[in-house]
Image (cartoon, rainbow, N blue to C red):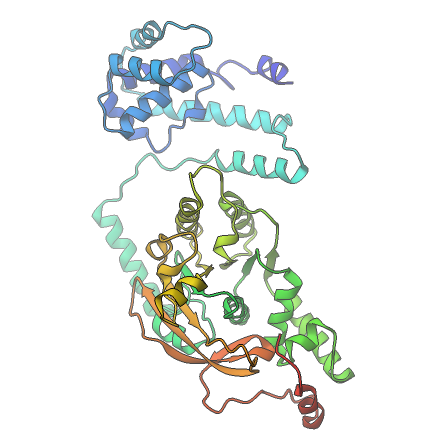
Amino acid sequence: MEKYLIENFKDGVHVSLECENDILGIIILEPTLLSQVYSILKPDFFYNEFNKALYLGIKNLFENGKAIDMLTISIEMKRTYQNKEKVNISYEIAEKTKRVVTSANFLEWCYCLYEIYTNRETFLIRSGYYKGESESETAQIIKEKLDGLFVKNINDWSDASFVANELVSHIEHIEKYGNEGIKSGLSLIDSITGGAKPEQLIVVGARPGVGKSALLNKWTNEALKQNKAVGILNLEMADKNTMARMLSIESGVRFSNIYNANFINEAERKFVINELLKLSNQKLNFCSQAGIDAYSIRAKAVQLKNRNQLDILFVDYLQLVSGTGKKANRQEEVAELTRNLKLLAKELKIPIVALCQLNRDSTKASGEKKPKISQARESGAIEQDADIVILLHREEDENEEKVNENAEIKIGKNRNGKTSKWMPITFDGSKVLFKDFEPSYTPIIPEHIEKTSFNNGLQNETPF
């Protein structure tokens, strides 16, 4: 199959060794030109294996701040290139430079090579050359190949006047439409942070069982009320479980009644179904695929964004995301993941809210009951990459699971605003719901249910 495809490549359309050789020759003779095309010229643009290895060697010298000339390139190639065909490396490098007459059209030639690469990849994709072990893996490979066909503009810098115009537009937009992000539904968060705004990475940290997912569900419901398109990556629980929790928040009916189909009466059942129908018509998408990694998150987010179905992305939770296998240990993998999520938020211009598991044992060892973001499992880079860090805390009570209890919340980091001390909020375990603090909080009884039957249903029942 591969031989057949290669034989069908058209010279100058799918492959141009002449263009490859000229570009490499110019870079060898005038290495300062590499900085002009560094952000767009990729190794895969070179079809010839030696040319690809040669460009990688030059690129490696550039990245490490070393001199670039025929001697240093030759030494680098002899160190890194697997010379199976016994090529005379020094001779081949010198041959590249002999063709060079002028570098006047260097940038244009680089764009020509990019166009040839695009034609080649499109031909391979259409021919079914890229295949994975399953249909989904094949689709993912093709998606990544298509994403790789787009390059950034050759000019990586913006002058001061351009940035000033951007800032004026930003100020005018705020003056006209306000500076509010996607509200969480908790006034303590919204008043300090202004809600989740585009390009922000927001991390919600808490120990296991405190209610991180409950805060995510609350935030999701509020986002839908603001007519925002929501994507939820469920790595801990089933999608239907998350939907049931959201339905409990929206309807006021106990979560256990909904998820276990243990309705008080037929009126409550009909009410829940009607609320579920309303929720099902919202711009809400779930994904609970196992073994998802950072690259898959990006592919899935781009997919939703291209369909205009993504204004905010929730990830539940960070430590369950699989590693890419490129890092030496798990801490480095999680650190790489948070950096990728921050870059993804900037690329798609959406906020990303990621839940983070904090170590229970480290809290006990320190003697402090309330958590710190530095106790994040498997990574200390989360606080560095996040724009906002929200911490949750609830006292553990081994003897009793309270239906309604006090909890605390803290804005531990806010890159563009104020932080806060620990502040009280209320947690209703029966509906897996956080809400603003109410000292004398009592359950809200839906209007459609008689108070006597509802109160009877609360007796002798634990919230989970």
